[in-house]
Image (tube, helix red, strand yellow):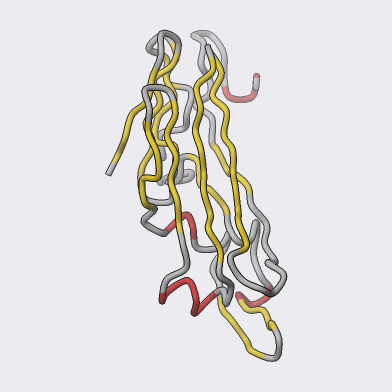
Length: 157
């Protein structure tokens, strides 16, 4: 499902699939890459619990081997709408049967999108709900829609 927040400057759309940004418009201009599969089908992936790839797609933790895809599992997970106001939206993911097969930790992952004037702020919060150290990386992988101005080309950016 896609949700929208906005103010007098920005309109932002976010999907529950990965909590991924789908659109960022200012004055009717789309600033976010719109996912041409010829180049890259994503738009603005959220990355958790890893950023990048694992050697042969595997890692070992406390003697057990786990497999995980590029950039972790959040980008392909259905997130729960956690909170929404006119200019703020937040999504949450907690461990489930699928995540535990890849990542044996008790966590709460949240991503917040907050509009402040003509600025979009993205905040991540990860909470360790267990008793062992929580090992993770978190980040974003946005694509930007360039060129934005007539008469410019991709190489100008």
